[in-house]
Length: 419
Image 1 (cartoon, helix red, strand yellow):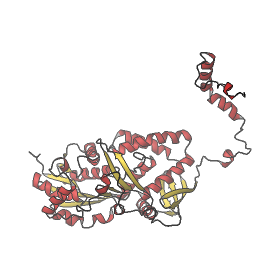
Image 2 (cartoon, rainbow, N blue to C red):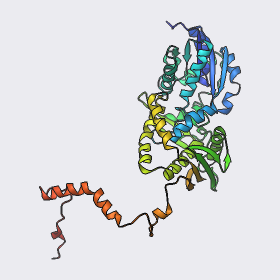
Image 3 (cartoon, rainbow, N blue to C red):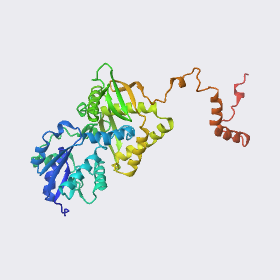
Image 4 (cartoon, helix red, strand yellow):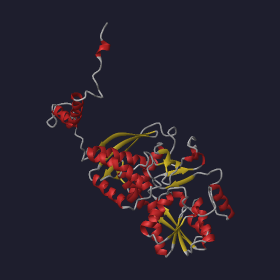
């Protein structure tokens, strides 16, 4: 017996899964379906979306332009934290879900809906990201997750379901990749990628060229940051959205930002995905180089220690939590002096740092030089080493003067004596 539902707001992308969910909800819940699509910079995917949603049974479609909020309130904080999941993934899909879900709740409340729906599978991470956000903002709304209810068990089944109901789709049994695209990245799963031994096919990639196809000359760029936020490219001030888009264009043309990752999903299994994040890869490296210049050792090292935790929170759908907010407060305090310019050379998938400068630089050539200076007396190093190594010295002396049981025992020189 289905729960009684009158009106549902569906997180809608127009892809295979959400396209068939509209008629499925109507058939199984006999409810009104309002579709909501978030414009996060996926471009042409939004073309014809309203006609498609209405044709398949939705009463209305909201297309919400969330690009600026996405970049400034979600992407940049994640970048400033240095958050990278499992050493590779720049969280392009993960960080988008809380924003989409939050707006979905707001529309549901505006429309007087009593339920929310999403197209996430029961094996993936996105179901958690959406539903934790629902709980954070309105736990009274019912949640419908068709992939956990219907008898469809594969993308092939979903394609047949769509064809039987004349739902227009762009995938086929022969082109079976699942993609997620926004202004930050393009992800690809499925098809040949389900075997981690298979190399991705060339048509898997959509926004980056291969290293072989990249130009045979270096592309040099300069990025300017204020308080950890990128504000200009090559001396030209740009909006956050325009800057990310331009870096995607430049990075993609130079074969930058491809990642092939077998990752640990939150639900307990491993999955294999291919991610393209050209502009994001450039921004992460430039930001990091500036931090090396302006942050003291203790702050930099401690910040590095919390970055994996921040990434884990984002990946696991825990964006709207006190811990993420607390980590953000710490990160923001570290960004006060992350102001300056970084020069990068881009070449065939590589990012080579060519220079960096900041009015808050802690690097001083006159301090670091091996020559004479008035700040550092090299003779002081002897006392520093003696004090710094005192625990090692005491431990060693206790062993030598006590049991003579020492890990680094005196070698037997007899074997070196001449006959």
